[in-house]
Every structure is written in C-alpha cells, then in structure tokens.
Image 1 (tube, rainbow, N blue to C red):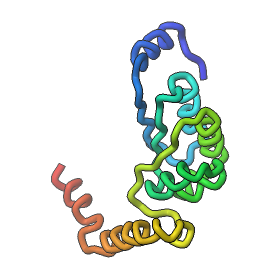
Image 2: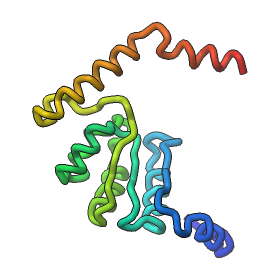
Image 3: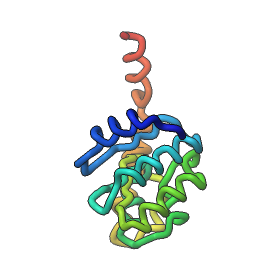
Length: 149
C-alpha cells in the first residue's frame, strides 16, 4: 500500500497516544483488508493495546487465558474469517503479548471444548442465541426498520 508523507503525518497525529483502536469487520474474508488491519496494528499497537475481533467472546477469553496458538483460536471465528491472514494477525499479536479477545455474541466453540466450570456459561450463551434466532422477530425488526427509512 502506498502512502504519501502528508497522509502518514496526519495518520500519526490521529492515532498518537491512543490506547484502543477498534478495527471492525467491514469486509469479511477479504485478504487485503485483514493485511491492512495487521499493518495498522503493527504501526500503532503496543503492549498496552487489546485486539478485539468478531469472534466468540467466551472462546476468545478461554483461548487467551490458556495461551492457545493462533491456529487453535480460529475455531472462535466465523468460517469466512478463518484465513491465513487472520492467523498471521493473531500470531503477530500473541508474539507481542497483546491480548486478543472476542466481541461476538454468537457462540462458535462447542460446549465440550471448555473445562467443566465454563460449560454452563457457554451452554447458556448457546441457548440464548438459539432462542433469539428461532424467534419470530429475529430479523423482522431489521426489515421493518429498513422500510421506515
């Protein structure tokens, strides 16, 4: 990616002294987008940063607390994000002791992959998601909201 000196200076001022930078998932599964996120992280993140991904929140916390490898952490992600670029970004952060957590309420890991004391928590999350998803209004409100605009 080419950047002008002027852009780089403005970019440095924008991110200077920040502790958290949220890199959203605006384009799922596009390699170039994930590499751009890694480039931003390499430039601006240090040990005071936390990377938060669109990934199973309980699963990512478990992965972090049990020092799982980047490859093992992929099971917490939606299938479309289980890419080599995501592995590279996770491995980069893990090597720098930057916590990688999840914000997604959709459970991705099986209950049986958690220790017994975590299983009721993950099962409750799975049950809540299943109940919400099977509900009549799961996407109905979104559709109605779009019609009103």
